Image 1 (cartoon, rainbow, N blue to C red):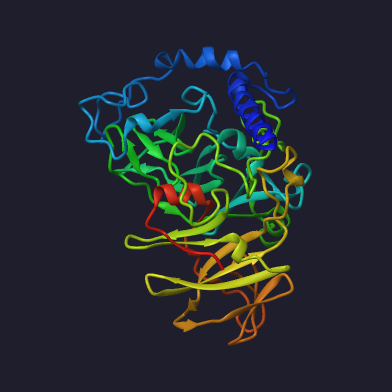
Image 2: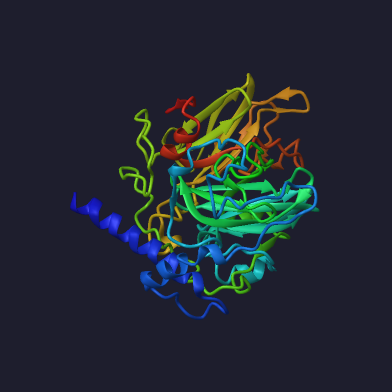
Length: 410
């Protein structure tokens, strides 16, 4: 019990640290304040911090940031009373609206090989978003391959998801509301100030209630794998975020405890698995399936075969990626490995894969594939498997949003 209390206290301090850092801007040479009272007083002025929305092509009306129960809104998809304050005011955890990128060689000066980095590839344009930066900003409003995107990360749920930020044909940007639903980041669009769940991309309260954002496939990999496989990619620069944060550190120390309990979660834990079990979750319009990460791990690499909507898929797992949420130093987190999920069918042919060293070999042609789904050696070299959109998150979070999920533990 004492250990649990210490971990809880550590995460409370972490949230206070994040909240107190809200007012800190400039270069990254200084540490954030640690005065939680400062964050509380900032939150008290939230109603004066947001401008009225007014965008052609979208409905105009009241802001869900200021009044979640306004009668002008469509019926909410969730009970507004279940949305909890996370501490900071809207955009107190500041999204990055003007991202600056650097080459692999420059980012290599401050990224460790095992650190996780979120990879987004749109139309052949590849960008990497280090979790050590997303940890402190949670949203990056960017454009990749000509597509406006919101690159998001919720630390409390360990969910990194990328969305198109076009709503009803109108491009907008997203901010952090300062609130949580089932411990998950509640975003808001700056066009109408409607509230959106990060985990499922739905607008749940406000003028756009019922709309859903389009998800763009993305996944976290280790920095070592990223720089080897994507040497020409651009990387989000931590020295030009517009804010001062202790990048490389984790303010939620101890959160990633397989035997622990979720933080600021006001729902019921699905007891089919431990609350903090990491899962690889996939959903379609008719089905949701989650694989417990413990069942995917084996040695240096492993392959798990599955299906969703009767379509075969292969889950690649490879060692070498650290947990961003275990230790204060992100690079020191335990090895949780990298996951990639792909269709098992390429050009009409079904493939069966098996691990070999730190790669994967198909039985049909003997081609070697990497965790990105790229054929790197053999008859099919240069080919790529079709990625399957998935979310790697904690079981408590996914099950709260999709209680009908089929759980596969081994």
